[in-house]
Length: 567
Image (cartoon, rainbow, N blue to C red; front, side):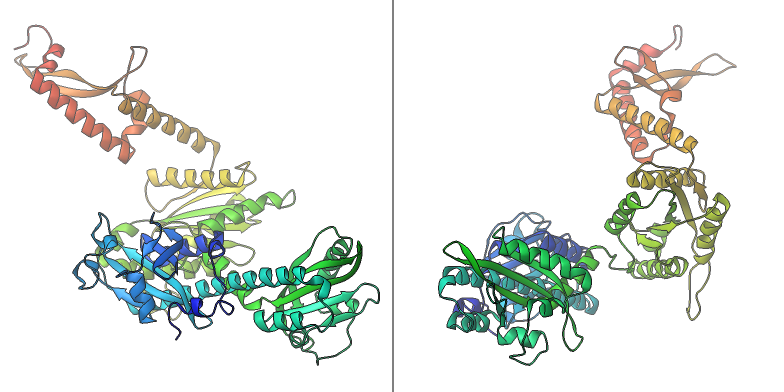
């Protein structure tokens, strides 16, 4: 394998990548990669002579990193995957700044990113806690490295295209059918060069383009004949762009599917500019490139960004896109959104471990796939949360029947399955467009139905209704009311005496929570009862009340609430 700095040794073969190695696809890759590796920190960096330059990262706010003694530098020099269980106890990395800083790196796993035999940079994942990387994580690293390498390769091809087009433009007046620059450009960048003589309408191709088309070199070709290699629906678009270029209204730049003379399906990108003489267009000079592999890799990356890595179902992002697509459906189109929450899954995870928990989640996904056929859609939207979007769900009884089939599926062992732990599930359902005016509203209504059912117990199927929305709004208002009072320190204990009915003696006090309103009035439980049922808010209330009662007991402030004559 070439040295990490091989890019510097052969700059023509390996163009310099700067900001080109950044962008939304790299950011998406790193986010999905960190999730798949279950690490809070991940990074794709490029290697310079003495520094590593991050191009996409998650959980890190670092700038350029000195290569000396860095974990990523060791990865580059080792030419293979490097895994460090605990950097703090590692003889080489224990005193590196990224390890010793607060919240620093303890676990590290990285792999070089090699393109055309040159190690350009490193893909790595990190954690603040030590752990061992298993064979599965090694395989995940290598799969993501392939995607990252494909993205880098695609970026370098774009740099080549840009550089060659610049040369073609600078030397355009000297270019002819078989001149030296076209051959040099083709050899240097592995790109096919082409020319159209606007006066004679003759088309000239370089050898590379003939090979791309699976045609013998020298086969006569015309513009109409060249267009036949593209799908019929693409030809009009390409011809229109060509006409625009010939009129001098802008360069040609398109990407399209392509079928060779032997029937091979490829993807190509073409760029071209017009050449004029004395202000008159005389020829079109262009380049065509086979971008099939990069395009396929981008497709895989898009799939990764929309797929849950554990179950293979769609993820939350994919669900949002499916929901948004409802807007484009014709009038009268209906759909039902089911949101599922596994009952007691966290307890199962705690008692039996994450490995068995992952197996259960995969089993749930397998069952949901059996229930949902295209154009239906299933997604995992949270740790133990799933969603199903089904078109044309039918009547309310039919919608409830489908939910009952989901419940039954999670109770049943599949054919060939050695074991299965029957699961209880809670389900909330909302209908489009009956229950919501927007796709996001549909998800909110289904979540409301799920929450309403869970408050009444486990294993419930709840269909959304306006009364649920009313109760939800009242509950939300009560919680907001108390949270504002907590933030403004307006919660107070009111002390109610407890008397012995026989002797009349004071036996103690009961502390009652009250809210002092900004206008001086006092609110009782009827105004905030739902807040006491919300675990997080209830915990804050309990802590604030305990602190106030302790303070009153210490200062004697509680005596102000004693009735007269009490002992």
